[in-house]
Amino acid sequence: IELATSKYLGEKGENILTISKRENAKVVINAGGFYDPDWNSNGAIPHGTVIKNGKIVSDFKDAGMAGGFIGFTNDNKLLLGKMSKEEALNKGYRDAIEFGPFLIINGKSSFVKGNGGWGIAPRTAIGQRKDGIVLFLVINGRLPNSIGADMADLTEIMENYGAYNAANLDGGSSSELVIENKIINTPVASGTNGLRDMSTFFIVK
Image (cartoon, rainbow, N blue to C red; front, side, top):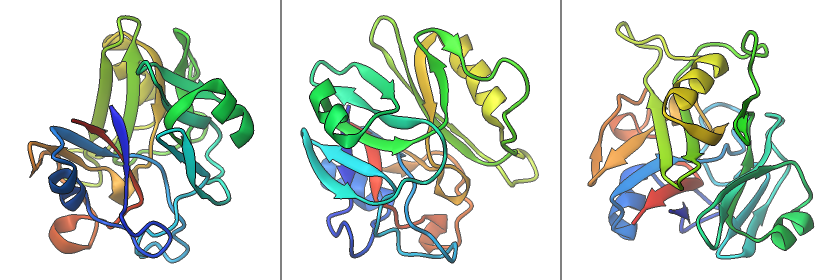
């Protein structure tokens, strides 16, 4: 599992198919949020701190989505934690973004009752079981056959698949899943092929 970023980070984002082909990835999902004041930005600037290969590659104000750092250590362990960027580096994050909210922390659900005020929308989430298996979850939304999901729904699904840690990633028109260079879900963005230009992605090589 690795974090991929737009080649033009800070200037413009790239779409998920471009990332998939360049990285020769087996699976790609969208990762963190990005500065999007008019809901139609070019995905240039990721919210929060972005760590890639153990180095900070972008640092902007966070998205105000609760949560904190979501990412992997050198031994591919998914770590979730609210901390400073210095603490994140000292903690051993190899690849990470800042987003949220967290859904499950060390086997305990963050959404026991209700959804914390979060609405229903297309969703993307990431999790990991105790045995190390990583879970990618993308749910269609804003469609006649799928309205989407809230945080309680995401938590329940991740629990059903044995997640020990899990977190919400950017949703809405950003929720996208590619397997073997093919779009698997039904994105609802208004860009080319319904795809948004974005900043960060989690990929499987």
